[in-house]
Amino acid sequence: MGINQQELKNILTQAVSETIENMAFMIVSTETKNPETIQGDEYLKTSLLILEPYPGELGLIMPKKLLSKIAVSLYSLSEKEITENILIDVISELLNTITGSLMRRILPDNFEYKLGLPESGDQILIETSSELEQFTFFIDDQPFTIAACLEAFYQ
Amino acid sequence: MMKIIIVDDSATARMIVRRCLEIAGCSDAEFIEAGNGKEALSLLKEHKVDFVISDLNMPVMDGEMLLKWMKASPKLNEIPLVVLSSAVNAAKDRVLLDMGAFAVMSKPISPAKINESMSALIPNKESGYGY
Image 1 (cartoon, chains in turn cyan, orange):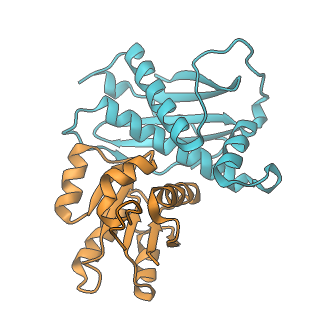
Image 2: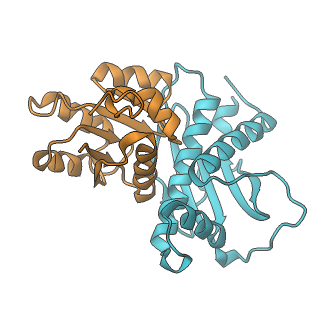
């Protein structure tokens, strides 16, 4: 087993697309002609440790505006009814599902894996490694980022 | 009417599971929600349910421990428990099925996955077979 950065990007794109399309019925792209500019404080962040078979960590950084749109679609609520707690729950479940989907694609079938619980907050990401990679995706021109520390999986 | 317990620490995940079950044939079911395995065990004392669908990674009591408790209990060991988690693959599936899980599904869930893995638990409207 062992992946390189290009393979990781391809596999991560599949995992992100599968998750967003199934959970939120939205299409994910890796590029856009008119990316929206989002200010730093308009994002929510969450991270998740990979505990076994190798240590790693993934983070998801997503604009609140985009999360709100996903939450409105998921919960059938109006935008006014969407609270910060709902947004945190949505981003946490998105990252949890993306990470599982990624692990199933990276690891052979006979490798069990264990994940931690998602943690949200401004200080998240990513103390576990110097090898931090970031991958940007778009939904309706709004960017979101997956940060990954998966160097142990490169060996 | 069917009664189903959905166990997940994420309210978003519980809501998605409920929607998928409704689309897959459980639209008339009563859904009860628990945030971890311990809450689910407490609810199982109060409610007679048709099946439990549970996440694995949860605080307080995880899904694997919930499965062990249910299988060890003479009152609960006949209730099917379906595992739905981001932390499962073929290797983990085998372990959970050997422990007595009815089925194991990976997230993201969909009505099609439910029909594929849980058809024996869900009413089949076309054939009239089921609950």
